[in-house]
Length: 366
Ligand SMILES: [Cu+2]
Image 1 (cartoon, rainbow, N blue to C red):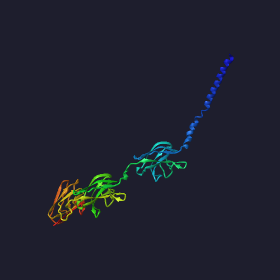
Image 2: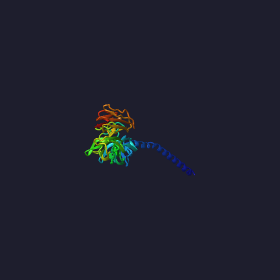
Image 3: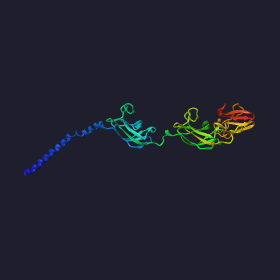
Image 4: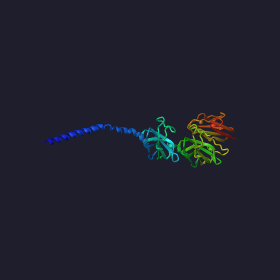
């Protein structure tokens, strides 16, 4: 009986000792969790810089680098291709120490190539300022620069790649205008119509402004008296004062490659006009010019000037022998020439005596 009671008591005692030992060892082990806390402070020294890239559409002007791991504050730098290796920098953005997901970089589309390179640089100089060449050298793993090539889709045509072009067609110009069906200009420009001079573009007989990009059915008023059966449509740039045709001057002919953008075309001209001694007695007043500019009439002819213009103009003789005063659209002015001679005249608003600006001449013959 005594033994039977004693054994459970001993067993209970041993159990109590064991439990104490267990709880005691648990207490002694409390420093163990500190080890995992120390481990991350060593980890940054072990970060291996890397870049993950993927092919993508860059036509919106940005690229995304899916993953960038940097050992320190750094830069992800996008290079264009320079003959199979990283060329000019076309964009960059800051990356943080450690992992960076989906880093978006604005790029210069004009300088972009179909192969781009994502290169990791360190931010070692002034923090937040990209200094390369300088302190912000490429990050390296062993001796290798951390860089990855990838392919991008670029926009079909960026604005700087517009190729200037002209489409012409033969037409009837007897109404005093020609129409150029299509003009593509890389910038604000001029559609300039030249008369023929021995098979190449001669005197300018009319011009009008064209916009950057495509221009459909550009109509140009021409000087019929100076027109030839072959005309040339030439594209010029509007590089000087915008809206003022300055040539000779800044508004030089546009070029596609090394060639001036010019196309010849044939026109049908009025039967009369240039013949010696023809006595045209009607002149149309257009905005900026008289049409025809120079006419020849016989003594006693009454010349009628008719306004076909948006702005007021005048018909004023250089010598003051006639002056219409300001005329508005649709109005006419008449004057009868009873003496032979040359009678230069001008618009007081847009020209001057001596054939300057908006001016013309009536030649009166016996
Ligand atoms: Cu005028």
